[in-house]
Image (cartoon, rainbow, N blue to C red; front, side, top):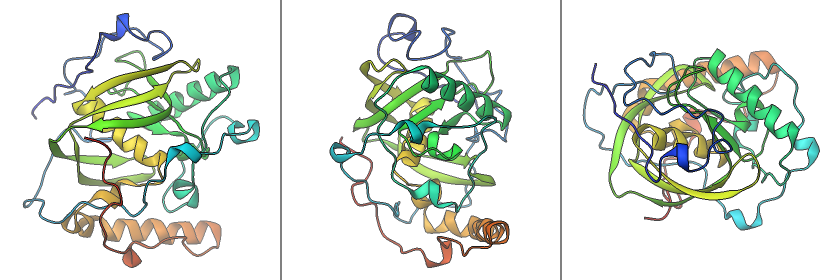
Length: 273
C-alpha cells in the first residue's frame, strides 16, 4: 500500500500556534501507512471506473455573518460522549458560533478526542456528538500520544486549490461505509483556537481532507452528499439500512431518505479559489 505523505503548510507548528492550536507539540509523521482500515479515512483509493458524475451537496452553505452565538446550554454535555449516527437530524441542524472560551470548552475538547480515539477516528465535529456548535478536532495519526491534535473553533474556508483529488473516505456517523469523495487538495482557513485567539493557516493533503470533511459537518453537509452517482449507488443499501435502524430505535420515520434525494450540484461549491 502506498504511503500518503501529508503535511501542514505555513510556519512549523512548533513555532506557530502551540500549545493553544494543538494539545501536543509532537511533529506530524511524514506518512500514514500505519492508519488502520477502520479509521475515519481509508489510506487507499479503489475505484471500478472513472469519476464521471458531478459532485454535489444537498445543503447550501449559508453566510456565517448571521450565525447565532451558542448559549451555555448549547455546550452542556455528559461523558462518555456518544457518536450520533445517520440519519439523526442533529447532523443536518445549523451549528452556532462559540463565543465563550472556558474550562468547559477545554473539557469538551478532551472528551471529543477521547471518543474519537476509542472509535478509531482521525477527525470529529461537535454535531457528531450531539452538540450543534462550530467546533472540530482531529489528529491525522489517529492514535493518542502520536501526531498532532488539532482544535479549530468557528472555522471558515478562505481559499481552496484548483486541484481536486478523489480519496476514499469513511465517517464515524456512518459505521462501516466507505466511498470516494472528490475534494480540493489544499485549503486556507481562518479559525479560532481554544483560547479564542484568531489565526489563519493553510492545510494540504490528508490534513486538508480531514478538515474539509469535518467542516462539511459544521455546514450540515454529509460525505455522501459529495459522492458521484456511481459511488453513491455502491453504498445506497447501507444508507437505507441505517435509516431503517433509526426508525426501529426511535419509533419515528427517518428524517431523510437517500432514495428521495434530489440530484443537484452544491450551491456554492467548496469556497473561494
